[in-house]
Image (cartoon, rainbow, N blue to C red; front, side, top):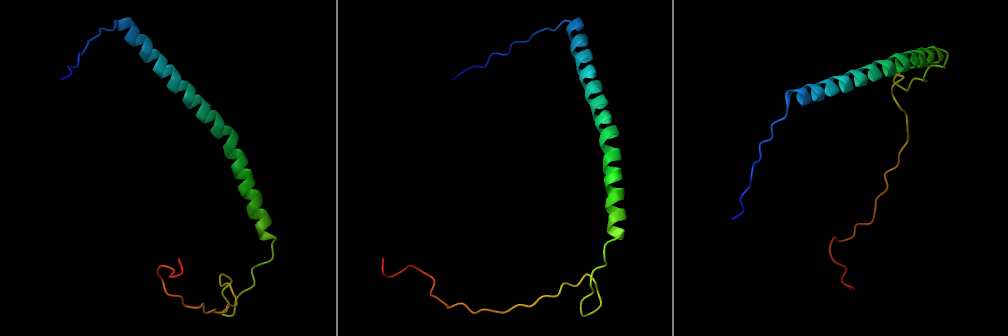
Length: 93
């Protein structure tokens, strides 16, 4: 039977404060980076959305289907019957 040894280490208070300060500085850096990216990306997305909206206004409207609803997609289809083969092992093998 194996025994596990637990070793308790005492960390000085100044090291705990140093670790805490490092964590706070890291979080503050990530926050500033995220805010900076938002400040740069948000106007680009806003302008792109406005341009897409404006250019969409000048497009020709969708042709309505037979029922007059422009959301209806008209199509033609044919139904093709496949030969029915028995499901199972091939007897030639």
